[in-house]
Length: 259
Image 1 (spheres, rainbow, N blue to C red):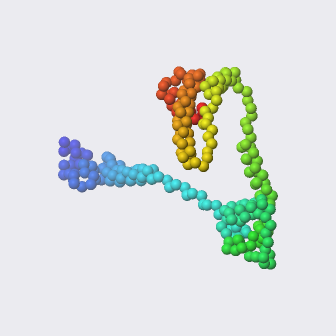
Image 2 (tube, one colour):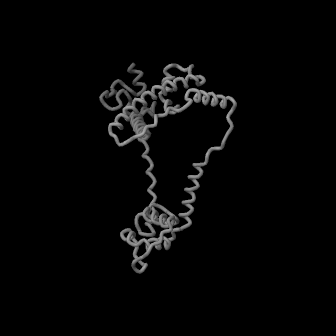
Image 3 (cartoon, helix red, strand yellow):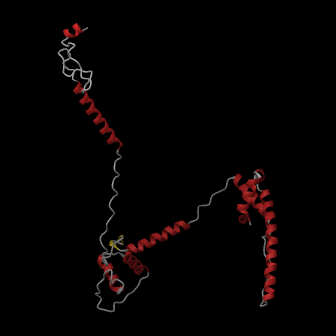
């Protein structure tokens, strides 16, 4: 065996240092294995491991959320230089001047200046002279027509909401069902339950007796009404086919509507 090793240039005197780096591997490239470099393998594997770990770490880090858009900033109120809430009636204005101008136009207000009609209008003095404040609104460009159009639009929206839906014809089956329900109600309640008509006088004793009698009458009528409601429900198509629990639930939820 040693002869073969000597032939390869590796005699028995060339021992491996098992405690050193790259144990059980050749320290230097041999003539027969010129590319055998254990340290190159180790360093290459280490670099690849670091790159893989770095890549996986980058993949695990969540991306930062995009910042929210900056708030919209309006110019100061053109009338009083207070903080503006947006463009109203053609110009940038605060809520106070917006409401003041709208009320003045809608109510056709007429103001009077007690000075020389040249009062300074700012957020501190704007309430001191309504005449000069309204004039300042016109000077900066607030429009009467914008107020009128806004008012007409609101009226139109209200009218559209109040428009009744178009009439439509019932199908024969639905009309028959409505007729059955109407007939059942008329037969069950020929006259609505009414409390007796009472007269009052100044006597306190009579009022106490009246209250007690009214309560007894009300209890009696309530019992009769409940019985009538059950009779009415039994006349409705399909009601008796329901379970007892469903019948009770419907009666409880709709008893006042039936009356």
